[in-house]
Image (cartoon, rainbow, N blue to C red; front, top):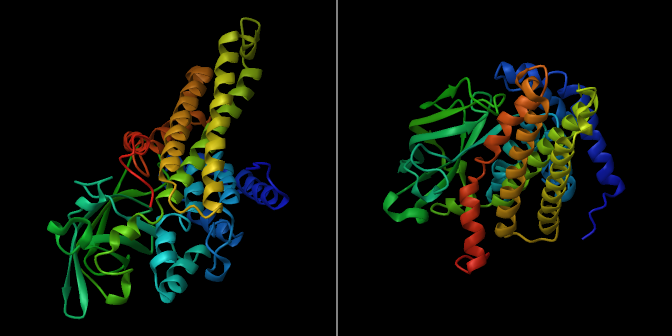
Length: 385
C-alpha cells in the first residue's frame, strides 16, 4: 500500500479544494443558519463532475478510484459536510444500489441524471421503530393488479424536500423477515407520498431531514430494484461505501478543527504570549494531529481495499467509521476549548464543526453498532462473505 497521491489524485484534490474555498466557504455559515440545502452549489459541483464519484463513466459518473474519491470527500468536508455528503450520494446506497441491481432504464434515468446534477435522489430506509435493524421494518407493500401499493413511514430522511425521487424499502410479509423485503424507486410527486421536515436541528442543519409517509402509494413494477424479496441485499449493497464516505467526512472535519486551532493558537495572546506557547495547548494540538493522521490512514486503507476489489470489508469499515467519527468529535471539543467563548460565535466555524461532528457518530450505523460488529468479527461470530 502506497498512500502517496499520484498526479491525477492531487489534481482532483486541488479541484475540490479550490471549489470548496471559492464557491462553498463564503456561503456555508449562511445556509447552515437558514437550514437551507445549497442546491445551486451542488448543481455547480455536478457541472465540474464532483458528484460522479466511483460510478463508471458509461453511466454518467466520474469513474474515480476509491482513494481519489475519499480524498475529494475529505477535502470538501474541511469546509462543509453537507456538500461533502452530496459528493458521496451516487457512490453510496442510493447510487450503488441502482448500479448493482437497477435496470438499464434505472441507470439512465436516475443514476446518470443524478451524477449530472439533473435530479437528486435520496434513500428512505430508517423507520420510527427500526434503524440499524433494517429487517424489522414495518412499511408494507402488496401487489394490486399490475402495480404495487406501499404503506408506512420512514424517518430521518436526508434531503427530504429537495429530492426528486427516493430509493425505499418495504416488506411483503413482516413474518418472513429479511426474505420479504423489496426495494423501489418512488418519484417524489407520486400521489399518496407526503413529508414533514424537521426544523431547528442541532447539527447537519443544511441537510433537510424529516419524515416520509406512504399512503397507498402506487408504484409500477418497473420501479422495483432487484428481485422481489431480495431487497435486503440492495439495502446492504453499499455498507462499506457509506461508511467510507462518512469516515472521510469525519477526517475532513477533524482536520479543519486542527487547522483552525493552530491558526488561533498562533494569533491569540494571553499573559503576554500566544496561547500556542503554553504546554497544555501544545499537548492538545499534538494529540489532534496524531488522531487525524491515524484516522486518515484507516480511511485510505478502506478505500484501498475497495480498489483491490474487496467487496466485503465490513470489519474494517466498522473500525474506520468508529475511529474517524470518534476523533472528529474529540477534535471539535478540543477546538472549542482552545477557542474558548469565541467557539460560540457563528462568525467562526468551530461551533458548527462541533454540532456536525456529534451526528457523524450516528449516521451510517451508530458507533455502538460499529463496536458490536468489530467484536463479533474478532470473536468469530460474524464473517464477511
